[in-house]
Length: 86
Length: 84
Image (cartoon, rainbow over all chains, first blue to last red):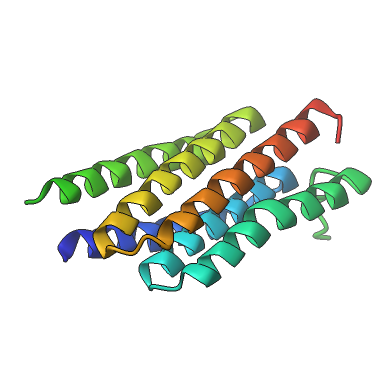
């Protein structure tokens, strides 16, 4: 089915671009949102690969718990990444 | 071309458009809104995939993601308002 191939390729491309964005940005809240997008696309890919239990676990951990933990950590430290090149 | 193919392609176009808003969004509220919209679109994609694969157990994944994605958006909003 060609449409499933198209939506799979779209999900993989969006996942790679979101991961690149989460690495390169200096605002850490943007990085948290980027990693949440990566988790979203991974959940769709697990569902396409016929693994609904893994997709459910990825949805619960990636979208809910890791966002919460990372935002607690950012609130306790600082939001913007410093330039540490000398 | 079946009607399900058209639906999946339109969902893909909508996902791509909201992803562009996620990349370009100047403020943090734009990115949080784009994440919430992508969550809604992905839930609808999961429901359509459940119909395509003819497995009703896949609807549970969509239900779990609809609940958890809302919680994630609320947490980001609470952080931006300073109340977390």
